[in-house]
Length: 222
Image (cartoon, rainbow, N blue to C red; front, top):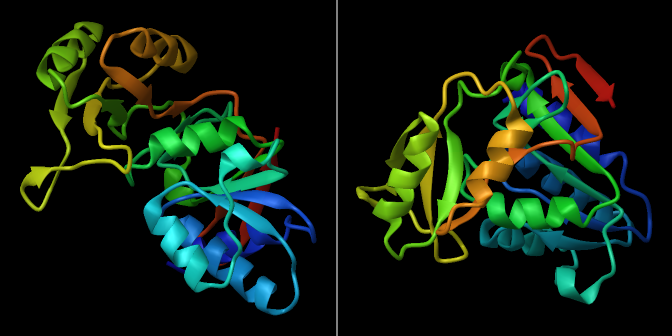
């Protein structure tokens, strides 16, 4: 918990007055949002695009002015978390269920800053099941097509019910084992009818802020 708090607060230091920023979703992004809220109370003037209803609620409570992505040309930076980060800065995201909005916001930002604790650093993506957002319509058929990529998958559930994203879709958590070519898998998955988006964020992150359990922080830049 300490590592997550430190990394979130460190990433917030990149925010400057007048910026339009993206705010991610998840346990580490939470601390960044709390820090930004503190900075706003101390006079920082920014606008923010949230990546989930959960983030919007938290940011509003912190006094952060929220705007729609469609109302701005681009974002100066986005702070978000990740479930895995490989040495080439490829990511798996979506453990919190917000991968579609997170990817849209990440694609609109000039600088994507990822905040993680040391446990999220991996040599190869894939130990964390890859979230794939799919349409509810005939999701079982979409699942069959996905599993032709030699993976197994499970429909995500919450409290015994199928988990529904902010966009009204479902998520299949897909176990590919070691993902040797993240870019290829991401492209091939998105070609399948019924797949809305997948949780591979390839060649998008520019800065990784890593928190360690001993209290120190490492900033990796591409």
